Length: 330
Image (tube, helix red, strand yellow):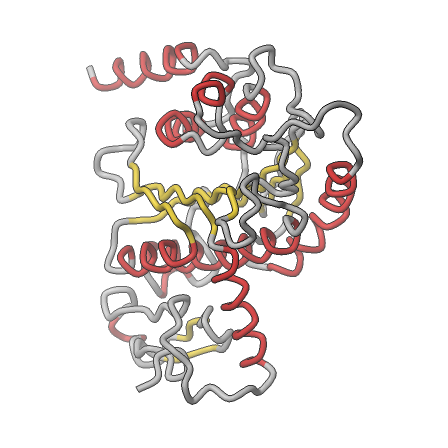
């Protein structure tokens, strides 16, 4: 009976959302459809019409751990659905920049790259030429009356739906690996938002306003989830948790949907971190939210004193299950 219900769900949900332009490559694609139905991080044409204030168009999305490409497919469809007739939003045709260590078969409007999403310099170098071209296109003078909703957001959002299986996985828990990936992709996303959305000006003219980009990530219910939400709420004005209906009931996975990026806070954090890495004083350094030490439950008993983990707060390797002495000063 349960298998029949899941089959009917897979069959009718995409039709109900009127976006079945292609067959999705994986079940997780329906999760992104549901998440956007609930939180509208890529607003549809109907949602735009009902909004009380103009919304920026979504042109470009970064999809991390994208293979086989289900999230990328849905992101393209959602960006196309910003207009009732499916025409491209003003300025640029929709594009998804998809990264994974596995090969992603070609998809329309998707530029794919093969490599580790934990290698931030590689991701940054790969997207640079494409984002440079798109940024130049957005800065061109409009040929007609400017639309107040066509704010110049070169990178509109980041999707992260990774499976936390990494080298050395037997040494520590899947939930810890997933939590580390969330923090790592958040660091990468924030840096890219700052670099490529410099020309964005809020409609209200308030330079301190939150940047209307989104970050959607998969996390797992664990002892670390509270800290993940804490750091996300520090850098985003809105953080909402959701477990899609298509997710197995016994699965620990949840999705965190973040919007209203507090870019000034992130810029201050990034500057402070760079100064510290160059030898700046850190006597008054506050607790760093990106530093996530494993707990005794994360690591096998025989390795609790010798397990090596990477601290994302200071960028150094640490040993054992104790908090980083730099990022958690006494």
